[in-house]
Image (cartoon, rainbow, N blue to C red; front, side, top):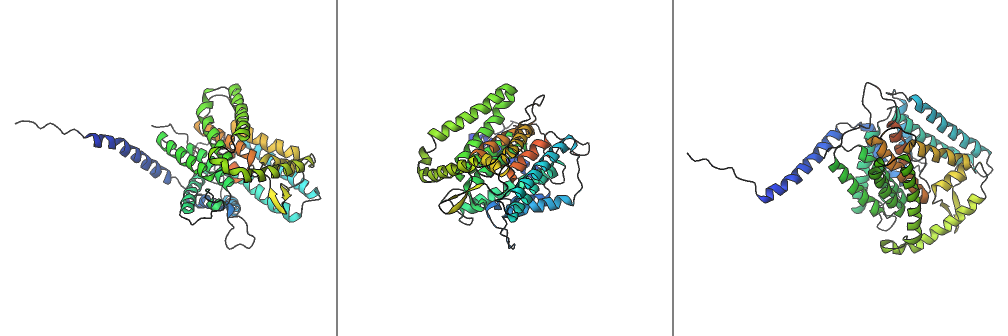
Length: 408
């Protein structure tokens, strides 16, 4: 009896197998990650996209994202910490001292009203608090990031469906309300999500989608921040601290060169009007900085009066200085750099700490041209991941941001 040779798969079928395997891997990743979600943090993270949307049913017109931060703080107070802060308690005390200093400066300032500084100090305190609530595992950072990422995808979908607000004539904003804030979120969260991906294929998808979203916001600073943040993750592990510092200096030089020479080239050629307004705001900002005392002017003073309107600063470093002077700048920038990059660390970085470094670089770059970056939700998420990558581990559970081997 003659045997029948097995049929060989056709070229089309063989070509389809890599795609099928790719989609199967992504499906497995999604199933795996969905099983780890803590629902309250996921839902509140989803609502964080409402940075430029007033909270419904509240007469104070508080931004939805600010309300969410307060709700996260309230939620954490009803939970028992699952991990001690250990040596990181000193960092919490330092930031508490910084907030106390801001209160003193604002109370003594002759130009700050009580309503003005109390509203702002409550928000800043809540932002700082949730950083350490994540580290102590009163709150689950992974679930919140997944919720925020989902909200950002939905925000983009509703924007291009014509449902979400379009305040910048075609640039992706939606419920963020401002294209620079949208760019900041898509850049920073897009980088942070790399720490959650189990396979390189999924990381690639996250990189592509996040990069496309950042481009669609039209925020040139966020584009640069995202590009350099990702580049840092790829290149810096192969270098020592000396060369990492050189790279950081090169990034500053490159950014200044691009701003001076390529800011209005190609697709950005129509930005001359908005750039002229930005330059006028920057000039007024520099005048206000020149009149700011060493200790600052108090909370809520990071604005200029131009064309019969208040305009917020377009420089987060200037915001720190005008509100709290040299001590505030030194404390917040110093904490951000030391926690985010850990320059005195020994040994090779983990994947989580490396992602936190890339996101920290993105934050520092965005702060150069965006007025409010430090002490915000994106900053808090980056600091939380950086701290969690160096927090003492307990024996009951593994890290909330899992250190996994990359699979192809």
